[in-house]
Length: 248
Image (tube, rainbow, N blue to C red; front, side, top):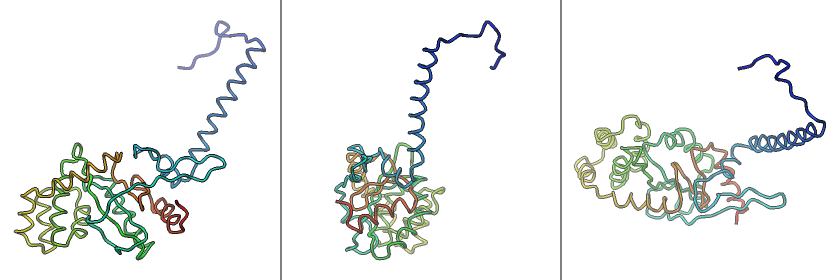
């Protein structure tokens, strides 16, 4: 609470003390200015430089005054997983995702189609599972349902329908989507009941967690990581450099 200053509250400073206070104040202002300038860096740059989610180190190290940015490229297997786009595309994007994750839905709703449209014929998009089972009880069942749809060649249509109905996840929805897509109902339900894809999904989870992935969605663009439902420009920044051969 503010209160008026009276004579008992007055303190007398010596000149040397006054100068010492000024020095400390100037130092504090300098540090504050540095934080403000860093905070004004472009969002797409911050999305890459400030990314802590890969435990082995930052995705891109903050450059020194005379250094070019240093990129870390990870070995991410992608063959044999659900994918769309040309098999010989120069850009392979592997997404580790969770069907119940709201940020994964945001990427799907706001960025995925724009990204593929921006680079026609140049992107192969690969889906790998990272269901966050501790907070998303339907993440694993929906992942299993998508793989049962994959057996009948309908992974991506099923994938899209799950995200469109994220607020209704459950067995009834999984069966309804299969019926809407004209999948063989008996085969699909037998697959769902069998739990046959739990091990494969667990292997995806183990790989991601051992790599240091800590959140969904996490993407690897030709092995270069980008974390979160970033805007289109954040993806384009990496893809354009990669297509130009500017990343070792």
